[in-house]
Amino acid sequence: MCLAIPAKIIAINGEEAVVEMDGVRRTAVLTFIKDTQIGDYVLLHAGFAIRKWSEADVQEYNAVLQGLKITRQD
Image (cartoon, rainbow, N blue to C red; front, side, top):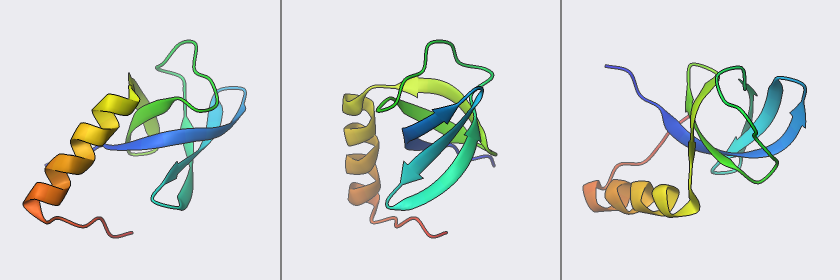
């Protein structure tokens, strides 16, 4: 099973970005998404941003995780 998680873009350099998830920063490739900006949320899978998400999408995702009592671990 593959899992993708939402991350917030905090810096962009060409087609790469620094994204943050729960205080953890990672590098993400933005090749598959057009018009990304700092502050956007993206769905991150295996280091690739595969889709933009709204803040409402991220809040719903977090609410579902809370309801399932799942915690993310890095």
